[in-house]
Image (cartoon, rainbow, N blue to C red; front, side):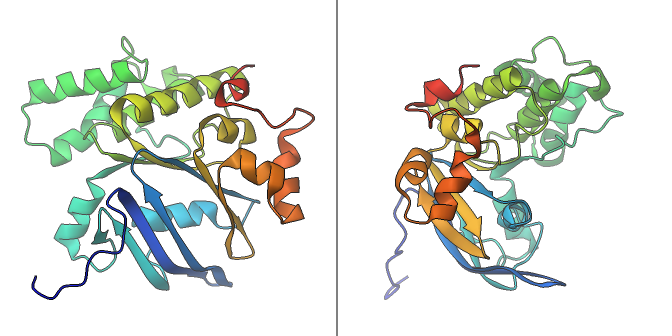
Length: 269
């Protein structure tokens, strides 16, 4: 468009949040939140219980509308878009909910097929092939015909992740992916998340309170407190040298273990 201002966002900016304010009946939960997420980053949102991290995620995926502010995904305004454009924006990302949110009456492969059946023009045979490949990526080849009740908690999370990957989205949102998992299973999920980024180029935004996982996978962490972001940066740097004592103490909850020097240390159990 002649005379249009240049886009101030870096070309690899996948998500741009500016001035986001979130309210609930009790008052303002988050105020004037601004941050960017860049291509191939793994960004983890964390904070104390009740700080609004899962609520923020629900705004990023369009489930809730903010009281103020803007969320751009791929340069498109999620909340200013009409229904058709918003649907197109939302097809560009996948979501893994905390409970995995699998339909118990459907088999694993039938759950993975749901987004393909709703949004893909592929033939049933081709869709089935895609679903099998996604299950293989997350290590569930051979479990296609199981019902969710026949899977362990970690396997259900992997099945939910396969469904989130069904449409080949470049962006994934994960809500507490390690919650309720034993340390070995959690470490395996961490390795899978890193593999998705490293092999598929996926950008991931993750809500988590599991510090071992955060040290293992996060390029950046956004720490929420008192309705705002109080820290934004690599988790090891924040844990060691952030000027806010509360932030450093929050990261020390990893226990008596030292802050890991490298991602590999956090995945050894």
